[in-house]
Length: 153
Image (cartoon, rainbow, N blue to C red; front, side, top):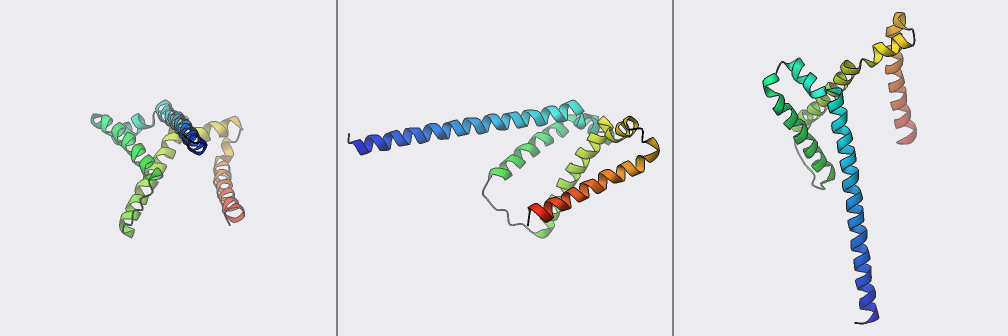
């Protein structure tokens, strides 16, 4: 073996080890984030509460399976390089499902932990509950506008 072939082999082995290390770190990070998300959903009881509100106790396994399938499909679509060229109507339908999911998650979170009423009581602002709610909304709007106008240019 020549020196150049030894160096090339060594470089290939180092490159393979680095790739394996990065794959392991990515997998571990994905497991940590996934476990955190599942723990978050489980501790808050979002899916059982959603089943209870929908009065669909007989379909509780279907709700859980849909949540897992949605997470897997979302992960796949996040990492794939394939572009989906679909009609505007299908994209609007897809966006509607995203909005429903985010809305249900937000509604489940606020219902389960009752953040705003607890916050208003702790701050002694029961009489100014509407003002507190509007401050949160306008703060979110101002933060989003600042983000888009200053950082995203």
